Every structure is written in C-alpha cells, then in structure tokens.
Image (cartoon, rainbow over all chains, first blue to last red; front, side, top):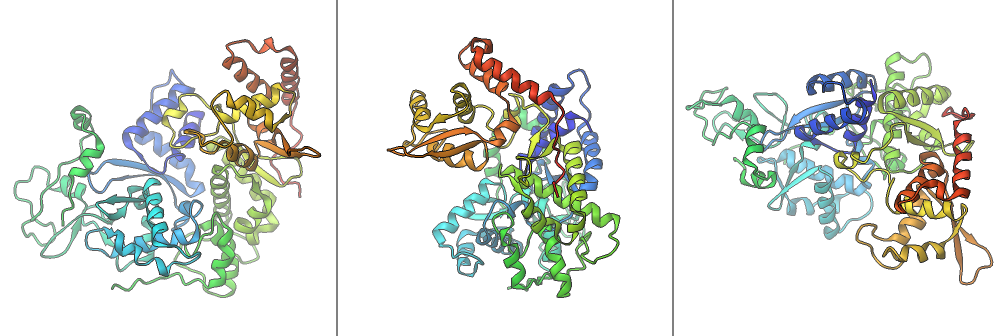
Length: 256
Length: 286
C-alpha cells in the first residue's frame, strides 16, 4: 500500500460512483503526484491490489456497468452490510423510507421504472416526520443528484451506484420480487425479456451475447428474440465520435 | 401487488434507538448500528442469522472474524462521520458501533486508527487533549490538481476559510467580527447578501466553520452593539499551520512571508513546537 493507492482511495471515496475513464484519469493523477517515474499499473491489477488490502475492512472497489449502455463504472462498496448505510448518513429517516418505497416500486415494476406519481402517492405511509408531496419531489431530486436514482421522463430507476452498493441487500430483502439477468446472473432492474419464456437480460448483456448474430434467439427457449439488439459499448468509438454522454443516454429508449 | 417478504422484522424500539445514527437510520440501519443494536436483538431473539459476518454480542471469547468486523464497522463509521467534518464524539462511537465490545474499546480504536492510517492515509487525532472527540487528519498533502479529480468540495484549503484564518493570524490571533466583514466587503462578500459561491457567508463563517471546529466564535462582553471575536479553532491548528497560512497570505499579496517579521517569527516558533514529538496520540484517555 503506497501513497499512490491511498490518494486514489481518498479521492475515489469522494465519488459515489465513477466511470472507468475517470477512474483511469484518477489513477494517473495519483501516480503523477507521488511517483512520476513509475509505470502506471494496469487498472485491473491496481484495483485488485487495493482490494486485497481492503478485504479485512469488508469493503471493496466493485466494478459494474450502467444498465442502459454498458459503461463500466466503479464504486467503493461495503461488504459487511447489506443495507443503505452510506445513504443513512446523508438522509433523514423519512427520506430513507421514501427511497425504500421507490426502491420497492422499481423492483416490482415490469420496466424497472417507477412513476413519480406512484412514488409520491406513498408519501403518507412514510416513517418519521410527515412529508408533503412537494417536499418529496425535492427529496427525489436529491436522490438523483446524489446518484441513487436516475430520472427519465418523470419516471425513476436505480442509478448504477445504487445497484453496486445495494445489490446484496436487494437480493436478500426481496428474494421473490428480484429479477436476475440470464447471462451475468447479477441483479437486473432494466433489461429485455423473452416474450415466450420470460427470462431477462441486461441491455449490455444482450449486446454482448448477440454480437454479430443475425438471427438472435432466446438462450433459454430458443424462440426468436424480438427486441432491438443494442451495440456493445466501445469507449474508443465514443471518444472519437465526441458525442456527449447526455445525448447518447437520452437516445436509448426503454426496450419493453 | 407482490408480497415483499421482509426477513428483517425489527421491533420499533430498535428503530428508535438507532434514530441518532447519521440523520436517523430506520429499519435498514447500517451495520455499525446493527452491531450495537444486535446486542439488544439477541436478547429478544430476533437476530437475523442469514446476514453474513455479524458481530455476536455473547460475552465470552469473540472470534477473530467478529473482532475484524467490529474494527471494519468502526473504520467505516469514522470515515463517514468525518466526511461531514463534524468531530466524532467518543460517546457516539461507543453507542453506535462498539456496544457490547466496550471492554476492548481502546484496542478496537487503536486498530481502527492503524487501519485508517495504513489504508487511507488518515490519522485519527483527538481534537483537544482529554476532549474525547476525534477528527481525521490527512497525512497526504492536498495538491491543487486534486480538485480536478475529486467528486466533492474537499477541505476548504483555499477560499473563504483560509482568508478568515489568515485575517485572524495576521491581526494577532484574534479579530472582531466587524473587522472581518470590513475586510470581506472589499472582496464582495457581505454578511447579509447571498454569495454565488459561498451562499450565506455569515452562516458559513459564524456557524458552519464553528461547528466544524475551524473557528471559535465568542461574544465580546459589554459591547453595544454586540460584537463577537473570532479565533482559530482546534481543527484549524490540526489541519493547517501558522506557517502555511502565512505562506497563503504572502502568496495572495505576491510577497514573501518574511515581509511580516512578527508573524514570521511566530510561525517559525509554531513550526518548532510542532516538530517536537507528540505527547498525545489517538489512544483514548480512558
């Protein structure tokens, strides 16, 4: 463990979740500050080395991917707890309960999205101090700003940060309602599903699985896969195209 | 509507007890308070056996894993609390994390402090001797370029706080609030006007910075209209130094620190005092 790793950890902690490209930038910055002459270690090894030290503290730098377009993301997550602990220190009791209600609606939904209206209608059931709908709207925005939720056209789904941090908790708390990707076997909030047998896949998992396959078929029941196959995320292509991430994300429509 | 099997049925009193943690965690309390709470839970025999690696409250030999987990919870607690820049009280640590492990609290704290320094580069220090409150000091020097890669504001090493610390030091370590505003007005910062960057400067200086222990704010008796004096708080002394602040002031004026001989001497003496070996470490004075 050197100062390079420590600075990396300190700065990584200031982000709830960070995209791979920014993580590399951060890594390079830490080398520049502490060890200009050293060769920058391969990110995967760099992170594995840090994780081996973090193991005894029951935390790890976890890698995931955004559900809509498969961008690799990283977050420092707690392994010992399966709860909303990082959130617990930033939000009041009633705000946490609002999140929990939204979370349940999202998990139960078919699309992985819960409408603002449906969430706000549960405001009377919240624990703690009474919250008005107007206030709840602002709290939802706070969740978006802090990267716990994503909002799209008045509907909310989980941010990759929330998925990385809470996957364990979600799977343990809602074992019957939870959806799993048939390919990667991780928690699935948004994705595509087979209309015949009902299995589900993440969009980036669909992209990878059916890559250059002209006749995509369901891996489970072999029926024709009826949905549009998204493209595999290519960091190089994106940088060349110079498309703003915001624009790209809004182009992706939900597949259901 | 799907049934949501809530495998964790916590009695309401439990939620009550954990309300203080952070801003009040409800059912899904962080493992830190769960650690403390589980002692009560076990007695009411509703502990969640399914959860992995949970610290057992039974008196008697505790496993290596249980101890490791306790230290991990403590480290996480300290990191999260310090992020808010609020000094961490020993009573809070005992209440929300240590719980039944009270007998080995000094050892747990020592282990947590070691891990914090080795893994993250943060040193656990007592705010003032015998105060039983702690903060984390960064052993790594902040670098300007950090600002480009971090996700938050970071420690206010530059900006309003530094200016105020500089003012206080240059004026002989204490300054009247009215003098502070006389100066800040020249920079376009007013106590009553909302500022684009600082928001509410009066609240920031007289409340926020004070709460974070960067400043001390005391009423000057027998003043009419009421005036207050500002001094460095214990956190300022721990996170920065007179020499660093003097260098900052010199830089702002495009001069050399030695151009202020009195302050320079004082800063030098302060550096010498710091260089002497510390008498108090992070170990609790129990």
